[in-house]
Length: 333
Image 1 (cartoon, rainbow, N blue to C red):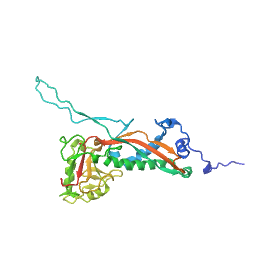
Image 2: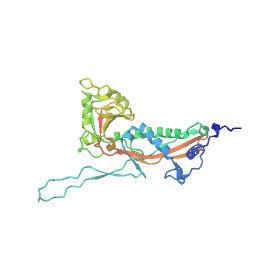
Image 3: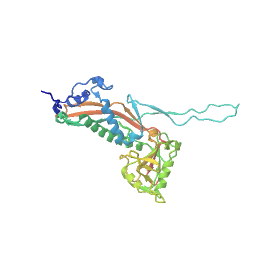
Image 4: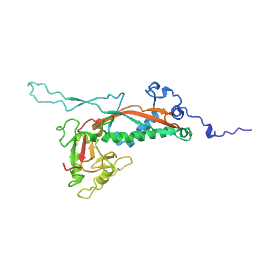
């Protein structure tokens, strides 16, 4: 009698060889340290596997627009420091045989992004985790990414710097030009009226764009929320052409006066004295410093029958170059 090969029943499936983390998530089984990065079990937790951490990073880049355009550095501790100079090396002219007096020395300033611990604490019932049809890793990555994206997106724009990043909208502001403002103070241009544009809106936007020096305009972009963008999309030039232009290819952002537009929902709406529009080179202007790994603690005891997954990540941020970002403030002056 011939033996017929039959597909295995669904309940007889063999768990994949890389399912150690899934076993930890579902049942709290012991993990092999070699499958994870530097965080040890003696520290009370395990680092997220590389596949899941990459998934979180991808979702964060999509959901947190400032992260996508800023400079992001990975640090090994919370004590990240960066040296910046407030000007170039002065020079002078001399004849062929004339004396060369000593020139001034550039001034160095230490930049220390305020850092805090970003955390998420999603929960699921043990019965849900036991369901073989439930993709635990995808759910966990999505839950953590959603929480982290919401929190960090708000902090990069308007964070206070108290145990969290300092947003660029909380920096001191002034109408003084570059070179005349203290280091760390952003320049703003008034719209001419409280909560509105005074005169031709396109001229105000052009003034804001041109206030950014040419080296920074290479790689610059506009940042505003959807409500402000809806207002901008209705603005037309004197000959009837719209300032806003849609992206010509999939994946490319729309443009305003030739520069891409980034929607950040944490930017304020157009209102009296609100800095609702930013224009700048955020790669040069804003610095994000973060620890490389996300750690997760599995807690099946505190809230039975639910299992909590306490995820943490150290992250900081601040304005690195105050000449690289300009603001439009909807005020008379």
